[in-house]
Length: 227
Image (cartoon, rainbow, N blue to C red):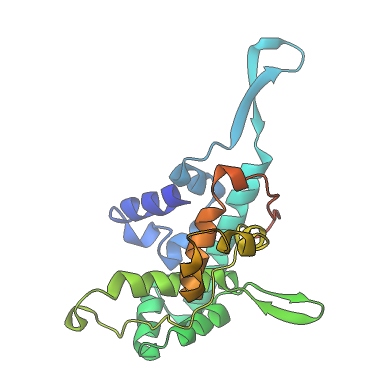
């Protein structure tokens, strides 16, 4: 994903209107284009089933095509929303909303989730809505962290306040949370009790990446764009 974003940004300087960072480019994005930008191989070479290893054939990578297809679908869906609103890019839309929010971080999260389906990861569990909204929360947090250290005169909007934000839930945290009490009671980790949810989130996510905790089975679901 990082490669995709970086490649899209670099290539946007050549023709901004056709870049996948623009509404027009999103609408026209193809699986092949996304594969090229993200450097994802869509086929794997395998030995011919009857002629042996001397002859290689390209076999479609179904998982790669699934991911790329989901990305293309999100881009097209987002472009339709932007076109309807008259915005040339999601960046232009966000800049406008940052001005309207006047530093209200939760309002920005609501705006993102209510405007773009790909940010609206709300699910029903036992008939109760569960609001995850990880990508919306994370985007507003990134903006806040990126501009929060600058002088107010250098920023064309009031930096969003994110102090009330919860954890950024993903498929790593639920597994580590099951062992959070054990981790927090280890000698030398008493300071965890004073942390905010965001600080705890970062620590738990990092803990989940350690090799000795990789044995915990991760939640995994295909066909979703919400990770």
